[in-house]
Image 1 (tube, rainbow, N blue to C red):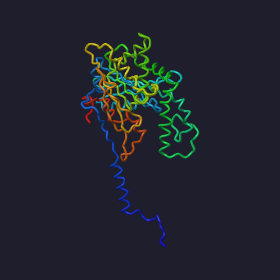
Image 2: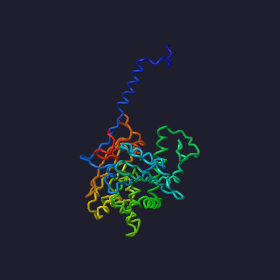
Image 3: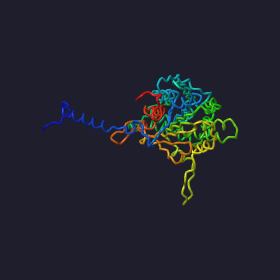
Image 4: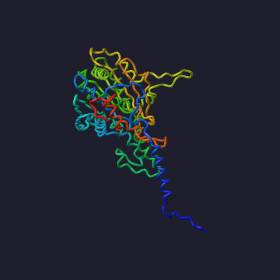
Length: 381
């Protein structure tokens, strides 16, 4: 009787079959929205380079706000570097050491970029220090310990490799940020964000011709808009109310990556009575845009606002903007589709890459920096 053995040399036919399999796998790997694809026909808007050049003060202020998952000061340098790669002859100062005064505070990381025709002043608001102490309570559950969980006891039960990666990251590190903000800590987070806004926007307070750009990611958008709205409703004439209103009036370019407002705004609504249809009340962004619309226009000033929502269709935590809710006189809304990572066999794009890699995506960086069509101040592709 013949004996089955697996010690035979790997045949040429077998090798060809393996190579064919991998060739098919690679051919089935796609990034359908690289470069980014504008969902709206005829989209035209300036990028960072042109906004700085067109401003009366030859400067534009850029506010960066990260989303869920733990971030540190290095995030600011990575994002600014990615945004400026396409701008010709741009020189970037090294981001300053994050500023924080005692206890968990929002860290402010400033950087300045000089372009041939104007200056870009970046301020990144790192709010992770507010939620990190609470998230450490889940460190015992992480199989591969993150930086905030170093020294925590190991997780010993067997967990499948991919399940472990997503449990460690998306569930134990990222999702808690949303739960914390929607819970009892929400008021305190907004108060800390208010302090940071007052600090970084003070210079632009009395310089209305300096345009403001906001680039926010996932839940960072909602924290920022909720806080600005709350500030505008403080005592009339108070410094917080004035700073917030002037910020809204100066806003020329708003980039929302991985927009989560349709999902997170559900927490701001009550359950409808039986038999009644429920229509969503205006969210904080809609209400801010309404306040901007009522501001008195300045003679000769371009006050137009371009609102861009960047969405990877495979990002489980991203939603396109419903244009009719936000577009109005002086506000144009564009939805732009992107691919942050490859899709394999039409079945899966890694959820963590899909959600976290918007501002690391070179196509996205160029679009924000150079606008559409691409600015003459940018390098040719």
